[in-house]
Image 1 (cartoon, one colour):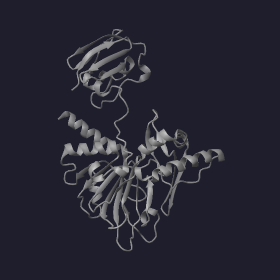
Image 2: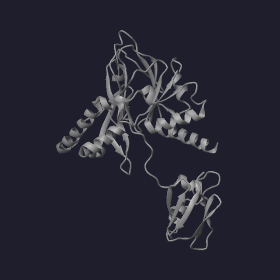
Image 3: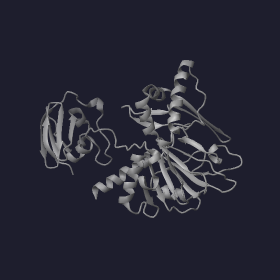
Image 4: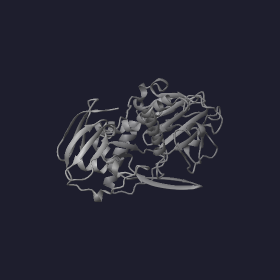
Length: 372
């Protein structure tokens, strides 16, 4: 529980110094817009539209009243009461606590990534919450000792979020077949990529469960695409700008699907932070741009591709039967080394989870832990 230890205000800004040393500044119109008395008591949804807010209303007096801040307004209307803890949680603060990792080659996935046993997941709520928080901040996490029967992945990931259906089905098999509609279903090595950029929306998280592992080859590769994108921003800002502003067409075609979407290879938030990487050279469709634009794009595209090939960014891991990896498909690029399917079978099953459902699960667990 945070308590304000100092309160000051101007007619338009309330400033609180909290007990943990942090400071929050709150504009008067923001305080009115978020006044609890303007929300439905049951649903919590806002009852007052911004068009009806008096932008010229100012703060007349402010004081601490127990665990709340009591505000008297400049005109004779009802006072406002807002929780100090709530204001602490909603103060403006720096961007999210994303943990970038650009040292893939130096990372030992078994030691440096989040792992949890299948039996502990969803049974040990505290450990599950830690595991999920690391999944969303680091982009990747692992579960061990998942039963190796087909379909076990669906029950394993069900507590994390909602599995989505695609043209590949609710779950899909990653193994070499005689006639493959996708290079993933061969024994070829696959370069780093994200899945399904030709889909709208792009799947948020991907899970892969190892049923059979090849003794030679078939190693999994992972890289933090956001970290590589930030490295590109620093070392080649022109290429970075090109990849964030060029709409790239992606296309996938099979007997049962015809999928197209356009998006930049590197996507930014309104504040300019990297929020998604969409990289899949196997499914980029021909760009229809002027030659000068194409020249700029291919220079930047190749620069990014060469960075992704650099071993320093790549974390290697041979998944063992029963291992399950979950990763942010709009951040973590994945690939594999080649293997000989004629000598030894390799079989993974995979599925996709919606992005919002995973973040919802994290938020609910955080909320539950705050109330314990």
